[in-house]
Length: 66
Length: 150
Length: 403
Image 1 (cartoon, chains in turn orange, blue, brown):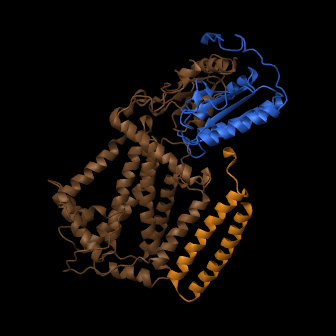
Image 2 (cartoon, rainbow over the protein chains, first blue to last red; image 1 turned 90 degrees about the vertical axis):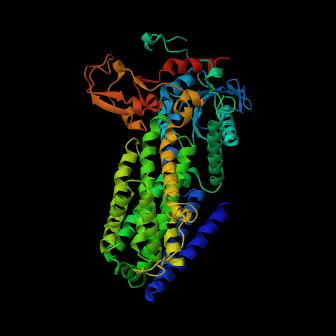
Image 3 (cartoon, each protein chain N blue to C red; image 1 turned 180 degrees about the vertical axis):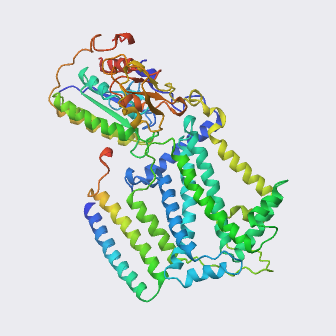
């Protein structure tokens, strides 16, 4: 289970890097809709990375919820 | 601790639906667990929990709604904090803090609730025997005006 | 109170009317949804626990993107569409910001409706909790109106149709219809002052939303006004992605003599106008009015006003035991509904700890929901629930540990 989560984090991080490069490309070529969509995709990838980190136990609930 | 440990659970009205699980005042699946219903998990005074342990219960737990879904918004968070403080006090008074537990279960979480209570009972079995039950506080300690009987 | 009688009557065995049974079924279904969500998201990340915070997040996104749009927008019949086109195609990321504004508005309504239904189905509006419900209904109505005026500001063909339809609905209202219509378009007919008026009717109610939010939070301690980080990222990411993939573009500009008949539908804001295809304007106005009034009336419908009729525990509102209160303020900090206030103590307390107090706790009974959290907070036995006293708890404990 945990290794699947780690794999997911690694995959999403690689995708996020790809998206970031795409954002720079979109900025350079004035493709604003393309760049903007990739900003969104990047943030979505981050949200799932945070979820996976939480499931792995690296991020925890607040103290009052343990 | 050879017999089933005597456990008292305070379960909030809005958390897990105990109607199918209760048999009188006990859990059908775990007859050594007695249940007392309370209006909200935040209603419990830590002194009552300590008194339950002193009166002879081997373990006591409080059950509230899942964190984030307390009907009264903050009851389970507050109770969690109070239990943390109470556990530190219990250590100072030489009572094992593992005898105290906070659970959080929603309306349909009967199985998870029973599983967690069962695990709690098993942990209690492994503990050394508690100090003998102390009688209820006398009238000098309690407010006599309230007509405290016991 | 024996253990057996302490168990509150379960919804299945208590006598309840059809409405009560229906609401119970909705409650159970809603919680079952939670069970499904918890297979993926832990409870502290459950989005349904943060629907209010999500709505607040989208409102902030709307304000920020709206500020950006406001810098470029020109509120005149001839210039509006062109200024919006310039934002979309001429300003770097302008089209994205415009799309974000559009999709965050839809998401705002979705979050508000989720918030409404969840709090309705889980009984979080009953008795003293009707106040946030009423302010919430106002928030919904104002939000819906802001959405309508937003679509008008673009002044494309859809805006033209919407304006005509809305004026028709307003004018259908007896007596006040014509003056209302004139207020709405800033004159007798659509003119250059119309879009200035509509811009005001967009920004002013939107700002009023924050005043209504202040009212909405008044009776809540620590309101959950922000979702967890994973959902902030998800929500902002989603509106960016949608804005990039499905750009929000105006269709054709409105023309002075034009009589367009159709427009692309937005189901979150423009559904009443779709109904005008089949029903007379007055009927649609009446239907909306009835729905809104029913919405406001939800906390007061039926015998669910009283805990006895609902088979829930009725422990009585919290009572301060004056003689014991030391003014420590712990109950004041813990009450989730701001139902306890501290007042200067009129006289010293009776017990030794209370003799030197400067403050005294007072329960505002109209705000108390009888949860007893204050009872648990008080270290000095200065609070009680009249039907569930400390001695009742101790008696129950004594019975439980016996045998």
